[in-house]
Length: 379
Image 1: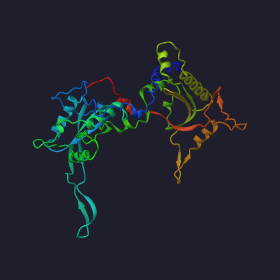
Image 2 (image 1 turned 90 degrees about the vertical axis):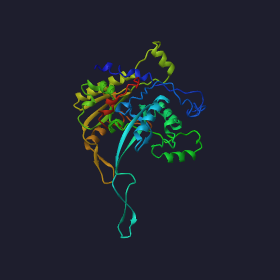
Image 3 (image 1 turned 180 degrees about the vertical axis):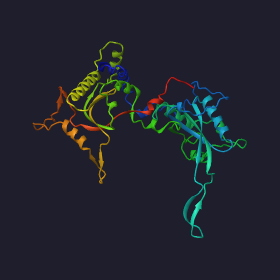
């Protein structure tokens, strides 16, 4: 990929970075005129076929709301009823998920019995049992606005299928406790049987999805074809010796003018990428193992490839790798010649290095990039 076209993929992202201030109030004052349960019945179209079973899958979003769970003989039936009611009446993408639990047969309690042996206790439930959870998705992030709004709705909604009666006892776990805690709160007339709902991760996705250690597919594409891309660095760590940042536009009026072609946009990201590329090649000409890396907002240059930053010491600190320390000292800025002046940056090919190089982890592609969601899809 030519270096001058490096940011042609990522440039439109900058036009979406806008800071909006509403009136003179604070965030917490927006939309407080209506109670949290207002608009609980939605007109959104959500599939609710009584002949279908809506089981949870990895495609149901990385974040979901744990509405409630059921156990016992009628657990599956009541879970199905709740899923259908949440879909039909409240227009929520609800799913069922069976969970299997296995606990030890006995545990040691406090104290001793009359023979002086430890008190042995047993779980009230059998050592193995199943529960069926009802979960609502599909949310891309834990702080997604729609997820927060849906969570509040779930806490206040009153599904008909969860109203207990003598003819139809509930299989909802901890139903009696939820009923008690509801009546000791100020909103006892409004809170529903799912008032303890909470946001959680999709249990069918791997842990790596929620702890990514690499970049997304677009950034990988921006760096894949570079001859000295940091993605080709064989080590786990390298030393960042130079940083070049671009420009992010925050003025919505200017963004609109640029989008309409009324104003030219000169991207400093292109200049940053060219500087990083030029410095990397200059370092390579000098015999240094240099790499370049670019994302949507900046470009960096690194030197070296190492498997570890250093060796742990008995006092808990790390003894820095001597090779890493040598690179940091080689490219760091020199003290100012004149009092009151800033440090004197070192340069190569007319391009300055960072005042203080630092060791960084080599980026790797994240597994979470394989689980990208299409926000326009519907179920």
